[in-house]
Amino acid sequence: MAAADATAPDFSIVVPVFDESGAAPALAREIAAAFAGLSHEIIFVDDASRDDTKARLVALRAELPQLRVLGHRKNAGQSRAVRTGVLAARAPIVVTLDGDGQNDPADAPRLAQALKAAAPEVGLIGGERAKRQDDWSKKYASRIANAARRAMLNDETNDAGCGLKVFRRDAFLLLPFFDHLHRYLPAMMLREGYKVEFQKVNHRPRETGVSKYNNLGRLWASFGDMTGVMWLQRRGRNPGGWDEA
Image (cartoon, rainbow, N blue to C red; front, side, top):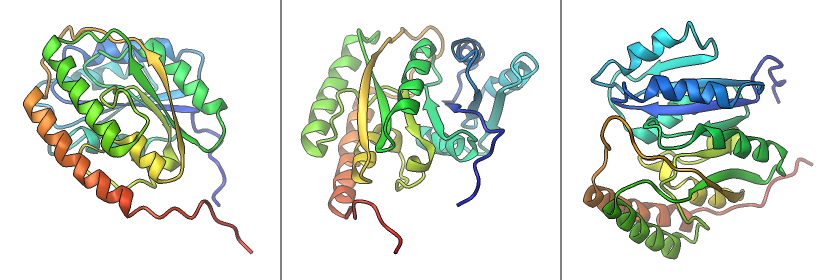
């Protein structure tokens, strides 16, 4: 086993962004303030934005030396952006937040510290949004999707859409990758033999930009994805660990 990098930070905060010029710089500053005093790096992954999101983040590096800015050459979706950030991350614990600013960075250190102190078999601690600041149609669609997902996947998750999640980098890299994986991380962690936990977190209204999803499209994608996730669950044979003789 390779020796641990003594210079690596304790936490890597990964934020996927697409056309979030209005939200991204302020969010980066909030994350830096929330993690002040903790060993960390901040990784924004620009998913080939059509606006100046990437340029504004690059300009911010003079103010935030712990900020890293990665850019996709082609738009590949939120899950691929998260995976790019995790692959680039130097810390053993990864924190993800949505790039629209609706996840409150002030909650992130609490979840990160909880996972750092948790037993090794806990692979993920997810946020559950309290008092969601979305319109009624989005909340209603999410309620339907979450109820269906719990019934079909038995993944212990009440709020799969919360972007604030903390997980072990090595555990994430064991998971099969597919588009929309970020919404099924608890189910995939359980499939791999890890435990998952959840904590209540704040949720804020979107102040800039527009949502990248519509309710019908989100529901249609969710039901299609769940079929694939159920197949992966059925095909997942876990040995319960291994020993070297």
